[in-house]
Length: 54
View 1 (cartoon, rainbow, N blue to C red):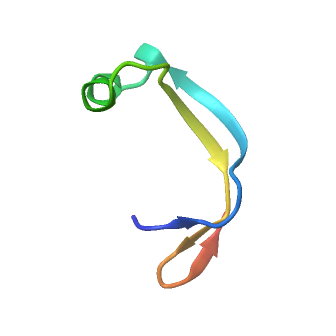
View 2: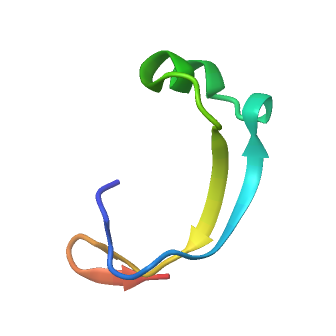
């Protein structure tokens, strides 16, 4: 899905860390080791053809 974030991401929360992330092996293979976290947050986004959602 193609979208643009049009303001800051707020209410950011960690929902998984390290081995709790299902795709951790793929992430480490492509981007290397790191302090990987799966996170969620709230932001306004714009999707084609111009709708805005929260």
